[in-house]
Image (cartoon, rainbow, N blue to C red):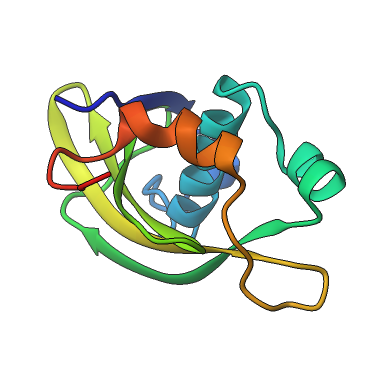
Length: 140
């Protein structure tokens, strides 16, 4: 069984529309924060990756499914794990839940790029630190 990165989010007024429902684009912010916190939990940061490895992690694509709405003052949990990985990119599955109810799922394809915007090899330390979070179907 793979490990999961877990990040908690509380829905604030600024996250919602006039009806108190989370505006759809704000889920992308929640997912980005969860990925950033996942990197921090490994003892890294986006700045450290840029400074130490001359690399950035960018979103190449995001497939998101909105299953149920989230509302003002909901407490959400975002569970993230690595679905697949190559030499230069990985896909992360991110599941947003309210208590035990799944409300949103996203498959985010992330690519490591260098300062010229070209794909670059994922640093070994990051690859190794991600291993416990690989989905069981990944062959390492």
